[in-house]
Image (cartoon, rainbow, N blue to C red; front, side, top):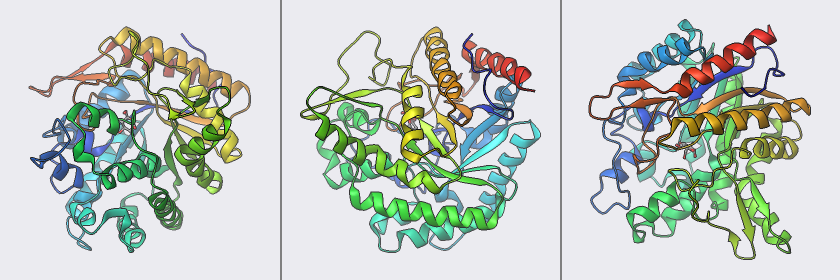
Length: 403
Ligand code: BGC
C-alpha cells in the first residue's frame, strides 16, 4: 500500500463525478443539443447516462460504505436556470438533497458549479463570447449559493483551459472531424490551443463567482485546472514555455488569490518543435489513448504549487480509463506515492478525489471506463470494483494515522 499517511488531519479521501456525465437526460444543455444534432461530430450520446440524477444516494452510499470521506459532484446550470433569469426551486431543492445526503453519510461535499455544460439558451446567445456572459454566470451563481451555505468546498469552473480549447475547436469548424478524431479531441488529446479571449472571459467569470461564493457562504472557493504535465524536448524551450503558458500557467496564475486550486492530472506529454506531441501507440496506453503516467499527479501538484506560489491544493481528479481494475489500483497506488512525496516536501495538499466514482459518459464516448464502481448500462446496476474497497481501505488506514 502506498504511503500518504503524512497527510494532514482532515485530508479528504473521495471520488468525483460531473452532472452531465452521470445524471442522464440533461436535455436543456448545450451538450445534449450537440450530441443529438444529426450533423454532430459527437459519436455517442449521453442518453440516460448512469441515471445518477435518481441514483445518487446509492452512489454515495457505496463510496461512504467503502470508507471514503468526500464526494465531488456538480450542480447543473441548465437544470437550475432552464430559461434566462427563470430559476427552478425544484432543481435547487434536488441538489440541496444531494448535499444533505452526502453530509448525512459522512461525505464532505465538494460542489462544482460549471462542468463543461451550459444551458442551451446561454449557448444560443453566444456562450462565453456573449458580452454579458460573466454577469449571466454570476446571476446563476448567486442563486446557486442559496443552497451552499454550509458547503466547505466550491469549485467554480471545471477545467477552464479545456473549455477555452473546446471553444477554439468549435470556432474552427469541429464537424469536419470524424467521430474518432473528435472524441480524442474532446478528451484533450488533440484539442487546439485554448482560445485566449475565452480564457480571459472565464477568468473574469471565475473571479465574480469567487466573490459571490465568499460573500454568501463560508466555503473555500477555487477552480479546477487540467494539468498537462508538459515535458520539454531539447532545444524547444521557447515553444514549450509558450505552450505551457497558453494551456496551463495563465489559468494557474489566476488561483494565486483563491482559497484553493483543484489539481487534475492523468498523463503527461512532451512538446517538440511542432508543439504538443501526440501519445505514441503503446500497449500500456489507457482506454482514452493516453500514455500510462501515474507520475502525472506529482508533476501536476509540483507545477501548480510553483505557479500559484503556494495556494492550497485539492486533487479534484486523478484516475485512469482501463478495463483492468488491477491496473487502476496499480496506477492509483503509484499516483498516491507521488502525492506523498509532494506532501513530504511541504506542499499543502488537502485531499484526493479519484476520477471517477462511477463509470460515466466520457464526452462523446462510453468506451473509456474510469469508475471505481462499474455500471451496467442496460440495467443501470452498480457493481463496485475492487479498486473502491482498495481506496477506501487506504483512506481508513491513513485517517487512523492522522487522528
Ligand atoms: C474532466 C472530466 C473527464 C476526465 C477524463 C477531465 O478532463 O473534468 O469530465 O471525464 O477528465 O477525461
